[in-house]
Length: 465
Image (tube, rainbow, N blue to C red; front, side, top):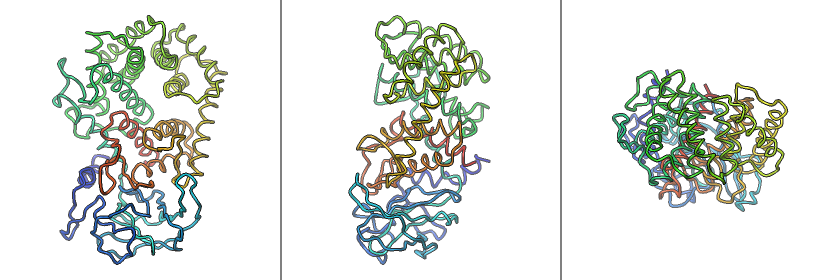
């Protein structure tokens, strides 16, 4: 069923990602990225097809919303009107009238904002929002399976990065990246780890038909993609075991994840991954100074894969010290802790209880802080760009997978809306476009950010099904 939903909407997604126009049913061309929202400084009588000359004062998810999802627009202005109007992008007819409520001042952005909920509007179509005195929003869609279509496009980006798109060979250079050599391996291992963790937690989001060389072989396409890049890392390890500690630690962690994912799919390849993980861990322990959190992650994954008692002792010794430390958990700390909690083998109940509380407390902190922000996102960093937001959202996705909390799902979805354009610059980070010029960051062009984006989408898809 997902394949049919994807095919019915894939063309629209492709247009959004390229910034081209689409044909409406009447044959009239409509620009789907910033081409039919009027100048925010003008009134609503301006032509619907003028390109904005400044950032609008009405902020929406520029891709759009699913019919039954929550839909909230943010309005900026010192003197906001009482009402807003959702208009059909083709006819400009008003299809929904709502109230702008809960005005409050944003200390961070030094602006007055109000909020308009139009969740009741669930008819599929192309729309924009206008409000008297502050202009119009960028266009957006309401459409079924919007998240899933974007998810498939994000997954397929890795196939487009391949140096050989016909299938893996021993001569392949893996994904084509700006990085090379050691830096490329570290980035690739971290990216693969993120994708494999997403598959482990949300397997139902992944299918075997997104359109890569291996589609239709009975194996989820994301696993085919991971095995393709991992084969390059395995070939590299065979010829150059490596001396970099970070590269070794993430190689161990990633290969253990691949071992778990492939046990029922291709046992021979699965064992190859485990053996190389053990070999790389041996090389890792030969170093005097290994980053403790990265070593902990490697040991947690290897303990989960092998059940070795010596590894259990190392992992629990680190955890007892780290979870009592008030300093924020690093990314490696968090993943290592989650891995330990997911281990089928013996674990220490007291340590598990403390680790769960630590992770849950952080989720509560993120949710509480995001709820106080006008744009409903939280970051300690002033930039509030994808780099600063993604780690917290991955954290929330993992916790929400365990307890399925409506509030947490809303926090995750609000961060998604922010990344897709409901932010003060109206930048759609996934598409690298703000209506006038390329955004400072393009999620799809950054392999690790794209993997984190896929992680978030896989959680949203799983909870919306």
